[in-house]
Image (cartoon, one colour):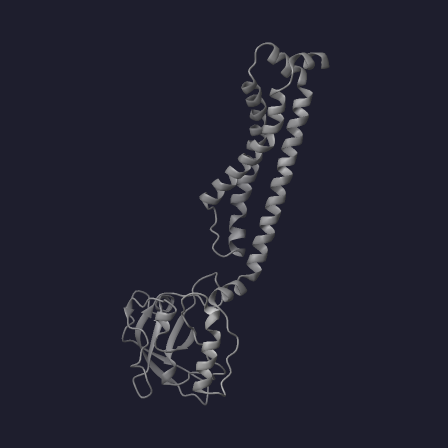
Length: 283
């Protein structure tokens, strides 16, 4: 169980709902009954479907701290601390005004601001200095910066995947363009005969593009099952990525078909402009 010592206003500041019972507030001061707020994961692990309000928990601590019995007064929604992936941890929130439950080397203040949070840094330093000049203010970070730091490895991995995906798409386009251009060059005589016999330019363009889409369909037939098979692996590396996401899969298919159309249209357009007489003389 992860124990957090918090003060009044913590749940409001962090926007963590407390749907059952109450949050820690000004009533929880030295000398009052020892209380705690637990998250839904803690309730599920320890109490199942039972209502935990009013139940007592014995917290065993190392000397010189004494063991303490606390009463559950609220149940908070699950929130993530540290890791952004995996199951939610069991968390117990206790009021720091009722005494420490373990040695405390530092205290973290969470501030909710409007606009750029960093513009309040000097104001916060001045307030703390007025309260106690001996207390330093260090390690100031925005929540966005903390998330970026936690996800740094995932961000690098995502950028690498994006870069390789773009490179693969470019190579596929170049390959389709080269293959289509080679096919058109080989079939110059055939295309000339078709046009001499009355084939329309649009029909010639569609004839070439049809072959391009056949190649693209063959690629999709191989790549889609591979993507579905490796989606669980990718989900374990990247936060917020769902395995077998139909939206992402449809977008990938649309991008590939669009790239195939773009790569095949230039040779197809070139084929439709072949002069039948020149093509026949070439043959």
